[in-house]
Amino acid sequence: MKTIIYSPGDPAGVGPDLFISLVNEDFFRSLKANVVCLGDKSLFDSRAKELEYAFEIKSFTSLDSVNEKIALLEIAKCPDISSGELNSINSEYVIKNLDFGIDACLERKDLGLVTGPISKENIIEGGYTFSGHTERIMERTNSDDVLMLLASERLKVALATTHMPLSMVSESITTDLIINKVKILDQELRSKFGIEKPKISLLGLNPHAGEGGKLGKEEIEIIIPAVKELKASNIDVSMPLSADTAFNKNLLDETDAYFAMYHDQGLPVLKALSFGDSINITLGVPIIRTSVDHGVALDIAGKGIANNSSLKNAFYAADNLI
Image (cartoon, rainbow, N blue to C red; front, top):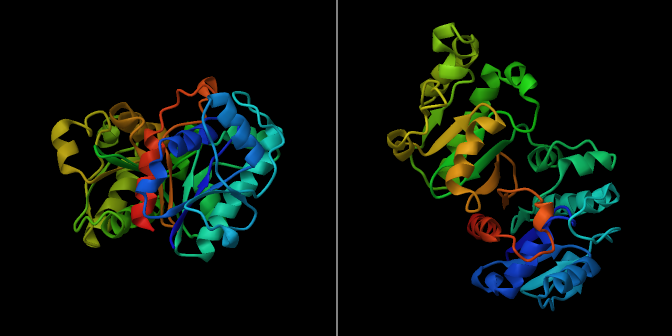
């Protein structure tokens, strides 16, 4: 029986809250897959009480022993179960849950992974080297490359670079990087989304896509050579577009996915149009992984007002993709 594993992220955030709210909506009965949430039962019992929700879910200590449609699986104990305030002592708990989910999905093809929001800062303060879910999954699965895709009904945006300072982006953009990641995007749009001939709109790095070299040379020296090679491979990708006009309605309607050069180039547009309804999908790795489009939201954790629509969509996507 196919199963979706949920790694709720930081216990201080809304990751546990969202799962509890979906249990109370009886949402998981609408999925074909079983659902196993990784977490300390004392954390979920405490949070359910704080939210004034019922939470009668059986807890197990082995994935093979789970025999329920919806279950908790205790991988580790959570040192601090309080909501709304990060505590780096929880870093090991968060990482153990995440790594278990990745490893389990790598071993079994009938599993998929949905992840809740993590505080990168808190994980690093706990002593880990951590750039984000995407990078951790790439490392853990020994994948050659990985691609972050944010998707909603309105649009899809993939990223050439992910969680790095803006000062490092230009030096990280190479012709090979663009070629490899656009090939992943094209292949996964076909295999995972059923798009027979994906049309990819690629953004330039510089304002006005470099303005013919007057505002930067990266388009001429790095990006355009990559595009030419991709086109020679029969991939329908545009020449670098100016990001300030690339999301106009006409082009938006004609585009299957955008390929942005850095995190805050494409994602603000997606979140302006679809925040709360979009999901994060990791492409180029041998597991199914989807996630929410938002952060830990400490200010509303434990208050019962967190919007669970993005998590619903992440579960729907995983259910369809496994």
